Image 1: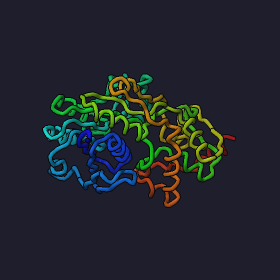
Image 2: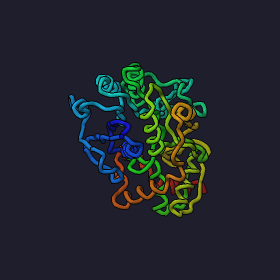
Image 3: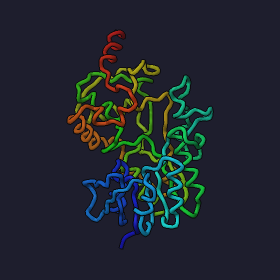
Image 4: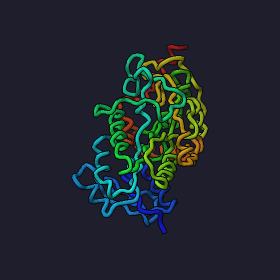
Length: 344
């Protein structure tokens, strides 16, 4: 006997793949919906995969058929997506929706939206609790749209009990914009140094896909209206991340710290932050009985193997267009070498 029917929207993405596996293992009958209708090699045959584009009028309603006991939405980004779900509340028992830790702002009104401004990087408490202030809802940025999504779903209350998961820096296989590539490619290219701004002390709390899937599994089994952070048990520094990745690949490198911000692109990494970003996970432990299923270090071998395979086949921009879209050459070795030469 199954626990019920779980409908996963965005199932072919990095978090969706893991969520489907976790739900099936927990006894749910799962429908995996995505724009391509694809499947993951790790899914059992009983998973039903469907092609669904939520931007098409009526597509989500048609895909739901008679409804579901829980809808897991990995790819909800704004108020309109929230209204899609609330409009189908009578056919959805409860929902689990992935939000983002990027929605918080500090007590001076600084957030991820202001990080590129002078003195614009936010300084949060360590760790950040869910009750901490957020940016205002709106349609202008990723963060404001996520807040609008949250507010709309929370307003539904008992009509659609929804768990919102504010995910940290998501990592794991199938990541479209993998931060770990910054270290993996340097190790594969034989780079002897790792130049790190802020002395390598930056912390941007990671969230492995399997830990997020565990939160989804627990929330599906315990419906409610709540907001929870989603992150790994540790928030390593960027220097610790680099050392761990080098260890997986058997590489040796010298850490060269910059005691301050990056100098142009030199010292800049996808984790670089002037102040630590660490999410409080005590509410998830208290409300859902959450215990992480993997540590950051233990998750790395699978991630590194996947990344190494991808960049072995093609140039990194082609392999990871979502990482390339920022217009930053993360691997400008000539600039690093010029900076190192000037420093000597």
